[in-house]
Image 1: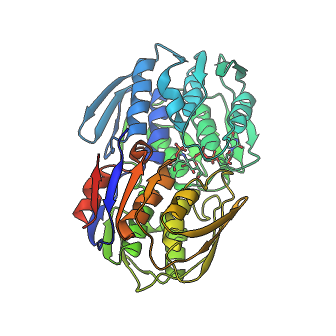
Image 2 (image 1 turned 90 degrees about the horizontal axis):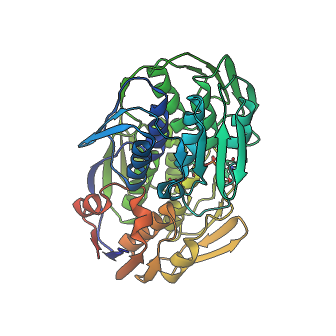
Length: 414
Ligand SMILES: CC(=O)N[C@H]1[C@@H](OP(=O)(O)OP(=O)(O)OC[C@H]2O[C@@H](n3ccc(=O)[nH]c3=O)[C@H](O)[C@@H]2O)O[C@H](CO)[C@@H](O)[C@@H]1O
Ligand SMILES: C=C(OP(=O)(O)O)C(=O)O
């Protein structure tokens, strides 16, 4: 297991191009199974989760070609039995359930994995797909599902789950008739999936609002598609510059997607300059405390909670951070405390008393964004920090060390 060794207190400045979004690409990959022609996806960072999902597509029978950052997938389904290792490594594997059922395949699939940030049930996925006519049962830790032909239906989600909205959308595009998803998630990744499906010939309307209407079509064609930039990767680098007293320009950013992050930076005294597809961050002399409450989009993203908490741990004043999406997303707190942060947690609320400086320590990344938060803390801290569990961070940040080094940070993998 590799770890990062970071020598802190170096200024972070320069320019970085943000990669395409992991959480947007994964649903696109699952949806390639719906097409009857080859699909090309451009500008893909070959992150761990993406590699695993590509392996699962190959396991199903698809031909997958990777040329640099271009993927070409020729869909074919020989096998709906995905009782294999990779499934439990990532959350998005559950989206294969929707695409295989859409093709009338009998599916056996293990429970999805992903970050250990809560119980993460899949009841809304199952409820939605069952309402489209699938017979689904859970058997000794596996999901077994079958259907001859899915039929459109009205599905109300009790919570605007990103994954459940994506799964139902994927399943509904080839279903007979009309599907309406009410209380749907409105995240940019859901809109990206709708655009992808529509460019294959699907009829998805209303993505980005809480009501999505899908008219089933008979067949989907191939397409060539560029996914949206990663709003969480962008936010993470913005925190890095703010904490490490530098100036950073990010290209390939959709400012609209990071509106809640920009709002919180401004409240913290960080200067933000928005360009057409760029954002520039200028660190203040001292970051100011601000409160955060994670919410579904367009609220503050839960994936930015941990990185932002690192920043608030060295702010002037007291910040209150409320995590409303995942019940166990404060695993980074104990590690930040080892670095000198003053944070107290009570249930879903963390109270962060800003300290002047963090200090290097031996810490452990326990999940993806919590791990990234530790890298940010370490880059700003006095002394050397060792972060175990680099594999968690690798799931979401492509060429992280290379980018950090190019900006003036000192990071090594050992
Ligand atoms: C691969 C990917 O895109 N992951 C993102 C996706 O995860 P994911 O799709 O898993 O997140 P959801 O929006 O589904 O989860 C939000 C909340 O709904 C609950 N829930 C979800 C489904 C369900 O069937 N039943 C249920 O109760 C979850 O436990 C959680 O408390 O959206 C999250 C919320 O923006 C992000 O943090 C993740 O980075
Ligand atoms: C939590 C995340 O991913 P996953 O849903 O795959 O665990 C994330 O990207 O922050």
